[in-house]
Picture: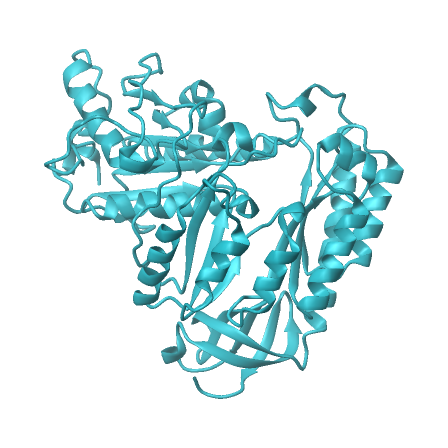
Length: 495
C-alpha cells in the first residue's frame, strides 16, 4: 500500500501511536486514539501501513530522549510516505531539536494533545493554502491530512482548559521540510485541567483515569514541571461523572493517575485533597488503584480513608530516590530517610501484604560511596515488591544540570547493584505469596489452552486454569508457586 492509493476521506484511515514513559503519557495516548476513532480512524494492525504515525515521547532521562530519536528515525525509514508527528515531553522540552529529526512533519506539545483533530485540520489547510508548488511532500499527503474537525467546528486551535482553553499561537513555520511546523505552547498561564470523554477500550479490563496534571514541587534534578506545567486538578464532579461512565462500560478496575497524584485538589478554591476526593468514590462498583504518590503527600488522613475502603487495591508506588539524607537535601526532596522508613512501616501495618514499589535514582552529583550504601541498606531493610532504578542523567534547564557529574562507570555500576537488589526483593516477595488467597482480575487467556492470566489486587501477575468466559471477572485465587516473575495459582470458586 502506498500513499497514492489512499482515498481523500477519513473512511478507513489508519493510525499508529508509539508511546514512551509514564502512565500519564499512556493516558494521553489513549485520549488521542479516542479522538481519532471518533472521527472514523482506527488503529493499524502490525500488517497494515498507517496513514498517520504519532510518537508520544518522554524526556525524564537522556536515555528516554535517545529512545525517542531512535524510534523516529526507524519509523521514518520504514514508512517514508506516512506523515510522522511527534508530541510528549521531549517534544515539549526541545521542539526544534525534535523537528530536525528525519521524516518529522510536525511537532506539538503536551498542552496541544487534546486538540489533535484541529491540529490535523489546520495542517491540511496550511499545506493547501500556504505551501509553495511542489513542496507538499509525499504523494497523497494532503489526502492523509484531510480536515478532521467536526463540520460545525470553526478552526481556532485551542489548548486544554474549560470552554476550549486559550487560543494557541500560530505554528512556527521555520521547521524543516514542507509541513505545518511546530505547535508547542508554554505553561506560563496554564489553563485548568479538562477531562476527555470516557470511552471503552476494546480488550482492556482496567481503565486509567487521569485526574491531575502538572507538578509544583521543582526537585532540582527534575524536568517534569517544565514540560507538564504547574499542578492542575480535575473538578470532583467531573471525576464522579467519569466513574459512573466507567461503571456503565463494565470495567472492573479503575486506576487514578496524575503527574503528581498526591497534589490533587491543592489548586482548587478552596483547596481540597486526594483524601477528600476518595471519600466520594468509595461506593463505586469496581476496585480502585492509585498510581505513584510522593511520600510527603501520603497523609494520615489519606491512609485512614484508604484503609476503610474495601475496594481499594493495596498497592503503593513511592519515589524514594535516595536513602541518604545529604543526597535527598541536595535533590530538593522534602523528607529524610527516617521519615520514609516510618511511612513504609505505617503502610504495611495498615495494609499487611501490600505491594510496594519504589523509584530509586542513583549517581546524583555528590553521591558518595557511603551515600549509595545508605540507600542500598534502606531498600534492603524495607518490604519492597519491586524497584524502578534510574541512573542519573542531567536534564537541561534544571538546577542539578550544572553540578559536576560522577564518572559514568560509577553511576552504571550503582544502577546494576540496585537492580540486582530489586530482583532479589521481587523474588522474595513472590515466593512469600505461596498459600495466600488474593483477588485477581482476569485480563486475558494464556497461549497454553485452558489457562488465564490476570493481575492481583496487590499488583502481581498471576496465571491459573479457567475458562475464557471468566475474562474481566474478579476471581479469588490461591497461590501455589512462583513461576519466574509470575505466580501460579488455582481458582477458589467460580465467579
